[in-house]
Length: 311
Image (cartoon, rainbow, N blue to C red; front, top):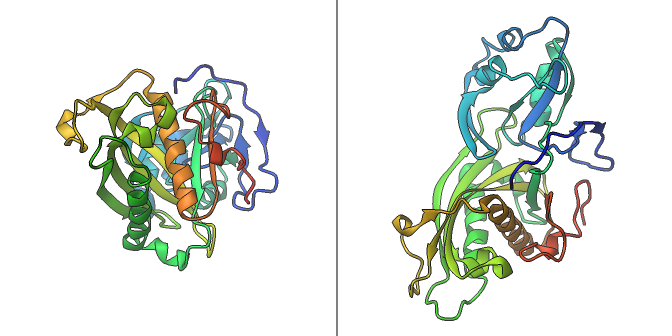
């Protein structure tokens, strides 16, 4: 979804949210970043110097924000942290999903910043999508990438087989791309799965009967004995004409679809989160500005769940 304006940002606490101690910024996300305000005379370089000799701070990690992929370390991100023009002395960086609380504590302990919180966001483009693993057994074992991969793959196969599409021999396929672990505490896993499937599954009523291809990045966000949370990010969305094919075509047949791709990726993230929540008999949360219950493609089964609530 396109970004519209930079709004005036205020702070508020996620009342009743058992899984977040950090304050959330207006229009900001719940994960994947931190914002903070430098104390007087502190620069990004001076703050980064505090972490220069720490091995974990030198490990690189990948983030994908606003369609921009970046691989860099915590130290490097701090050193080049931008100043926000709308709040004097404020800055922020992308962090591994799940590490927000740990890194906020590390930043606060330097004594060089204050008001560490979840990230500022651009109003008009905010998007949140995650689902719970419900009462799935042995959730603490999902810290191992292989175990997390097996759980995600089983739900992914269920997703592509969830709907029979008339005229198609096979409605979709999945391809595991990579599963790994973030190098920063609490070392939670993430994985990428590529989907090629009929748009009737991925976009439902908003579909124009094409083949859709996209990657889903699944991040284990909050690990617990039950109701662990997994975030959903859609990337590299492409389409291919049906053209009489009764099986998904190979990757070379797909082309970028720049028109409304933000909106379509949002719809797909809701579709994924809703099905995975159903698979695990749990709940999901999908929020995005500009989408409301009742619109084509809106994941109605997620509308009862909201940030700070579980059911």
